[in-house]
Length: 396
Image (cartoon, rainbow, N blue to C red; front, side, top):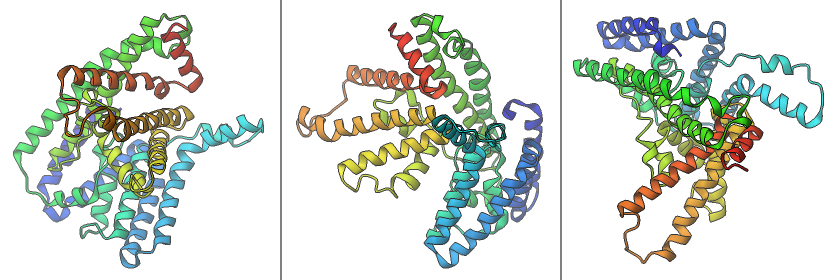
């Protein structure tokens, strides 16, 4: 990805100098122009699709701030999701239809070859956030330059974190602080080390996991590959987040953290509070709570958890094994909630500390890590292949 390209860092340096040299009122224009130029250079003609979508969202959000129409908001959100669905999921849906009906669909080859615009998943979620908060009246005063600087902020375009408009825009007026440059560069170096050294080295151990001859690989190699992949995806993804957060600090902008030592989590709920935090916060605010959260019946709460994790799964990739992976995490969240609410009160007296023993904590961390690691099979492989790998791992 472009984060490891020297041309990208040259572009960052030039933009950073311009940003801090111009009057504060021009900063949003600089960021907006930089982001749009950057996206056009990478995405070509597809950039105009997202530009048109962003322009429409900006116009509709202005209307929503005036009349707060629920139908206008719903229509705008459906339109934004439809664009995402067309580019990212049309091939998957047409292929599923042909598999189920054995029908010939002439559009399938074209849909499967469609190029997905860079960062469209993050772009979509930030537009939905902007539209909803526009209707709620929760946005600071701003104009189109601030909006376009937000949605086309190039450090977060490809891999997040997912930003919050009310937190992002006020920082455009912050004064220059030399310490931000030092902190930003240090964070970028950490991210590059994670990506190039740690993830790059461990990736060499993952080959047997998705090799064509995986059925001939013994169980110990598969276990080693899966554990290595679990760390690869963390170092790779958190490395990108570190680079994005560090780059933003060069502009005096603090982005939300995306990871907090997730593999030290004591349970699956804590894991999702530490892993891809910006996505979890977005799903909680805009999917889980609108569905009723935990305010409804017990059964409804479990359904809501499953729905949220299904959305998380399909957001990660246009394939059913991502949905399966999400549902597996949803099931683990439901089991954990059932234990906390129904089982644990019966096992421990009221007021007795739970989980304070170092041995118990270590066991909980190890168990959670194993659960997360096992489900990674279905994140990287289609369901049938993932199931075969599972069987091979247990020598069945």
